[in-house]
Image (cartoon, rainbow, N blue to C red):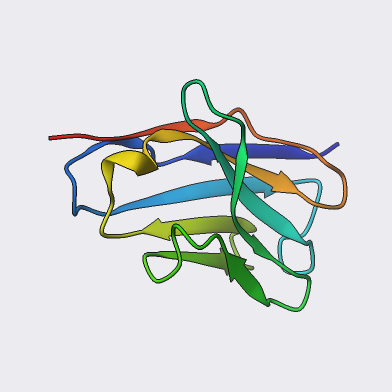
Length: 113
């Protein structure tokens, strides 16, 4: 059984940073293609970043250069390091396995002064 648990969201001022975590069980993040998505109020869920089984990452144009997707194989955890946050980054962030299509419950990120 796959379980994904996100954490690390919160309220941050514009220009600030946050690191989201996605603790996984039932899969190995070391080899699992995974992704971070986000959904803002009234908008469709959108892809933020993804990582292939060999560790190749891609990013949405809106976050490229500001966000970094990382994985800790020992902790079996996926991270999304976010910097230079903007109000338009406000959303619920989800991690997902691109193989099993399991999703976490999401973590709220609010960027506001």
